[in-house]
Length: 455
Image 1: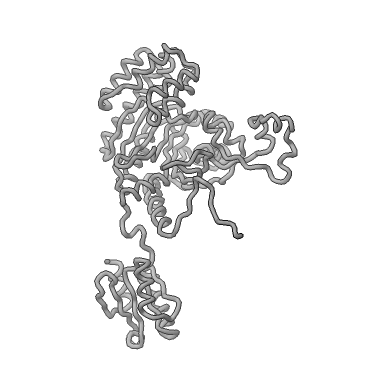
Image 2 (image 1 turned 45 degrees about the vertical axis):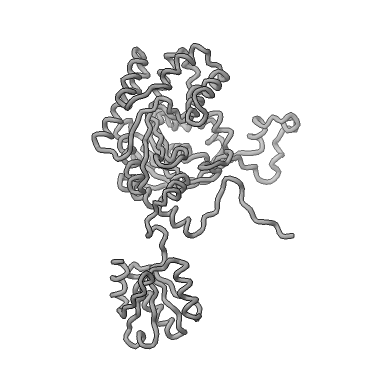
């Protein structure tokens, strides 16, 4: 019995129409990145586990896809580890590589490895897939694309403001209404100090980052499990409940963090970034969210998260400032800030809202009908001219009944069909038929180019 074909859970196939839509997203993002002076790089799908482990926090490390060593991968394993189920210590013995979890840590490795070739500040963008051993659910996949833009080698908050402009421009071009949520890791560190639990900053951020998913009560339970006292949680709760507009929230944080140098520095940075964005005019809503943590350990300053306003789905873009990431690769003191667009979630949002322009999914603009060898030869010469003029053409490859050829053109939503018979061949022209209204016009290939381009 033949094996039924399948793909792993959390992954997807994309047909030609879906790829046309995805390329519309990638091309939109890529064009805005270039508009702001970013240059493209790529890194390998797999990295050494030593590069990846310990950079994403405890939960992130669990979601790394590990690759078994080639050949006898059990050769270096301690059998007692296998028998006892000690997979934490067994994994490094049988696996030295893993699929990248995001594009930021590989980028940090790239910067350190190629430091002598780069001009600082270095502005890069990267559009590649990443993999996470997560539980698949709506809007959450095990393989998905990220579209990252980062600036390293500069402490200036101008970079954060420009990244917010990029976010605003990309989603305006895509037609998606968004809310940009901001926080600052220094604010969170100040809060941890204020409640008397500075050593619990990671535990606090991992827990409160789930507040939108599981609610405040469940977050409080998790904080208790992570060792926070009832008093510390009670002092943290008012911070998570701050309401009002951004100005009110900033003032509330200033009062709560009064006397805490770290926290007030974070508030000042937030004020600068928010004011800078507002002065440039933002179409997106920008709000301060004091519970926003994005539980990745490498953030040290601004934290950014973007939500679609008209679709219930998780974050569609995120990012932030990281001051110490390259330090673990032997290059301390290099500050960076970046954002990452979740292309797969953006794809789902555009599908739900049906926001794709017609030209995003169209490929062939003119199909030449096939009436025989001589006619096809003449048609192919005309197609060469039209393609040189930027018009996407194809010829029906077989001599078939006209109904069959027209059905093919309709099925592919091709707007024009070109007819080249004996009369057209004698005049060096073609009959261009509009599939929308059936009108037919006898034209030269150059005239056809202008007609189709002006459609």
